[in-house]
Image (cartoon, rainbow, N blue to C red; front, side, top):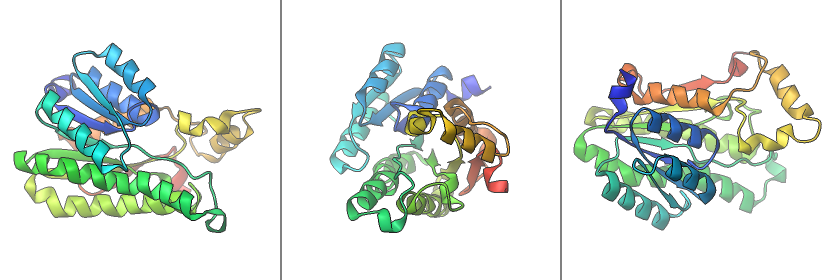
Length: 251
């Protein structure tokens, strides 16, 4: 059913070059969707393009730059005509910096990517969805959007903003055919978290020990949840945030 469901659909995915975004792109492509990726890192995008030459297109650019976003969306609609699913996945970490250790440049970098970027991409794609009276948004929050301790001051603030933004977008547009939800990952083993595994890997080991499930998750697990939220089976799920955190927020 899922194979048929996503065939002929187009997903626009930010942060598609690595980690969760890359896994999401792969998941939709395997289900027969077309995918357009936007990322500042070209290497991972090229890898997907080689693997899926007919159904994957991409732009190198930043979600925080309106010109990059506008051009990417134009190319996506030129290539695939419509955008049915938007995965706002691009994000950056702040090194768990406390507020007094956070300067203005770090604050702006986190906010520009994690929340302003989501705003810019959503506002560029949403009119196309409203015109068709159909669309699904899957925004990437974090356990740091639900509790403290998942990041530093800037990252935690940005992910709380993602949660609020997701709820408001759904409330404002669900009667017009557009549905928005968010995912809140916990410990997911991606290139963003590579530093935790360096050296003796004690940080990664500590995180696994602190997670009730006793392990890190893989990006593909988040991608599977994304498929569920983008599909018809979740049509009555609106404006919510679903943790995928091995029980972290249950503590």
